[in-house]
Image (cartoon, rainbow, N blue to C red; front, side, top):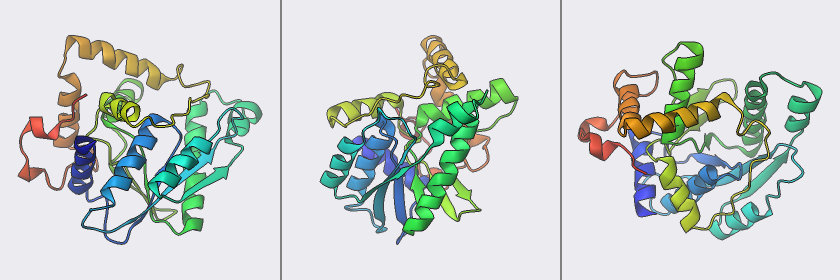
Length: 252
């Protein structure tokens, strides 16, 4: 857990993700990534030199089988205020619109609903659970399907809403997140989305795993290239103090 929180703190500081007085929400989907991030930020909040307030927010997408009661109990134990916004996103995307590319519409609707929720609560930042492997897969998705060198940014300004998106887990590999979730016995909720194992992202995840078997250091090299190019928003602000690739790169 100490190493996990340490990697998150390093990422936060490299990209100036947190300032004193921030009111930060963790976007909690119920998956292992967002739950692990919530626990890490709750721990970091105890001693971080820039004081910040922490909240947890969930968008209920409309799946009857998803029960967030265990998440609410976890937030109670962590002493983090928790709010749930009920939506009809699932019905709109899969039943009313019957989209050929449902992931794009779903993401747009979720982003809008979250921004509205945060503005109503007076929060200025949202922390998302995207990790090291997510960044690599997103880079490959853009390359393979769009012919672009691109990825989401560590810090994204959602200018229309005034909300900043931050991704503090970019230095943490998925294997580490999984181990933390198991160690802490986090109440992970299964994702019932029908696109969860059929999307292009799932295809790229499998391909990346295959390539990593042949080229073990592939993901570290790709991640380093993203920072050195750098992709838009990916140049670390404080990396001059740590040139070592070994120190910068996460491990599973």
